[in-house]
Length: 282
Image (cartoon, rainbow, N blue to C red; front, side, top):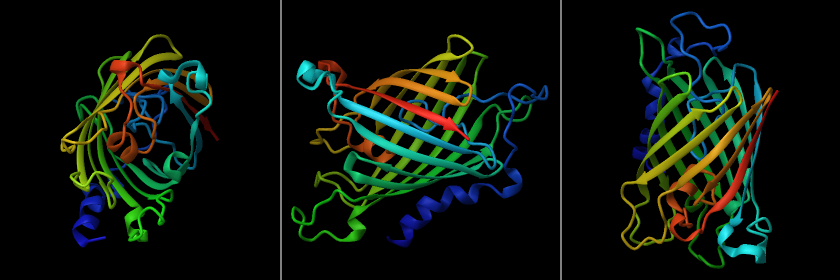
């Protein structure tokens, strides 16, 4: 990868020092100046949230995304065509996580780093700001179909800045400016480096239930691209050490490069996918 891209994806790491990272907050015993977590899940729906795993805590996330509802009873409304992602996240320090995952969508392996830059605090900061970087390997690319394929073409990268605000005890919102780069794109006119703005939110219905939604506005999608901007709507249920998220979305892939760059469904004609994320904290 060119030094320019190395700088782009590592740049957010230079925005903070270890001393700036704040301790994971227990929302049940917060000082008056502290603000509780804006989100309960590590993801809003598709987009990463500003929630992090606590130091020395391990979280295992199983994600399923079924086939299109549009196919009806032939595929039992998509249940016959499941895509699965297994994601392991560990808190290596106060406000810093590492993760590894494997998705059956394009047989993608991914490693990620997520780190808190600042936490929302009364009279100090109106926002929580978190950085997220990842590198993935698309192992499904077939050399028989692409004879000139090299290992570098399988790689993709993501850099995100996640900015959230807990507006009230019920409502939280987030913006997620995103840069992602794929060394191989299937649309010749598509730039390898792509930009998007994520918008998401959570509205708390009861102590354990909430409605979540997020949307990704792709800024430089090729004019002849068949892919769409991802829109996702879901419900979260918190049950002790579990967070169970059920949702509908027009993106089948669950990695950032996949759902932002290759969302193939359309809400207009019912070509959407049902899915869920199940998180277990250890």
